[in-house]
Length: 579
Image 1 (cartoon, rainbow, N blue to C red):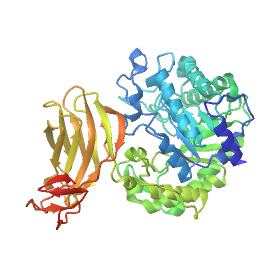
Image 2: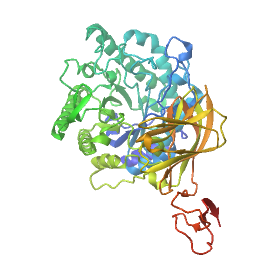
Image 3: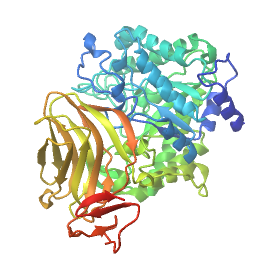
């Protein structure tokens, strides 16, 4: 059955338009899609300078460069092939729309085309694909205000705009096969930006009236979504659709009596029977905390008990309503922190991940891991930045004997990333290298630009135990990494002007031995990248002080050649020579 489903999906991709067919049910889709992954911080990335939704400038603020504004590289078809080859069966592609549409909800054609292109990357591999309306919802801050909120007044104000948005998405993809699913909205919060349950952040505590308004709005948005998509006809008449609980809450916990409200108040949209699914998210703590301070690790027995309790709760309160459940996002609570559980307590994290995937599979619940596994530059090559975690998840799903294909960054040891960086504001920075390294390992960074910058336009900034900044004026800049910097965490190219652009050709970190290790640059803040390419220059070691400049000829390992060399690349008097 599954092979037939995959073949059908490949036949019915966007270039082949077919009439409506009998789609598998949502319950069948959840079983067939296998292990899922979120291609996060990509199409949902956004950088908003105007936060007032009543200001016309709020809408359509970005172009296609938004895809890289949170540090990821533009998605490539090769990345999705890698995920398929590894053993994943489904990809959730979060998409943000407000920064690419006008105030009436009309989507920019170029953005829709890019979303379409990325969806094809997924579908053409025979993978299930979920697309959604993502950071049009979310918690408000000084830098971000969402336009979709769990509030009845907000729904009344935005109903037409929201339905117009989904009508365009549905029309764009209405001929696609059952491999494509639509998700209504991401983590929709109330006017107080309350997590866990509605009105939690209200002044004075829980407010029953505001909570009721929030849950009514969730059901109204869900009904509008379903009605609009079904109304476009074609394969959308049977497409499997997904609606989320309030803030995608899973309802688990005992510290407040209202935690289960997002589950109990969510209604199955009217008119739906077998082609609707519910989505929730889960980021449990695997550590003990006192406030925000970690005081120790939880026992694996206690963590497993929480997983069992969560699944039982979902079966009682959601599956019982006649629809399957998907964990559209999951991980541990500090999955995006500077020091994650993957860094600090990997063994315990892997035990949790293995159990979570196994229990969800046994209970016919879908799982889409949030964003890790392949991240940053690794996606560009493509490669896995956390291959051991990927293996853990895949073996948990497919069995311990499953041997996945997991290429790593060192498989591309001679490859460098080149890109054009556009700096949008003064002092904005582009990361040249990041991690945790000292002068015991590396002695310098070499930055190669396509052309020499104007005087005073750019600097190289080093973050360590102390900070250091060096202005640059040459196309090639060598930056010594001195011992007083201690452990270096980041090196950036900083724009000293209001705006500017630079073409980065290569970035190398140089070891004491002279070996040059390609670094993987990426967006830090206030800039975007474009025209990204991978070059494969010959891996040539620099000449360190341990190689005498006495007229002798040396090979690339620093060994002196006793006779005149034949063809090849050598070092003489500190310079590279080609025979």
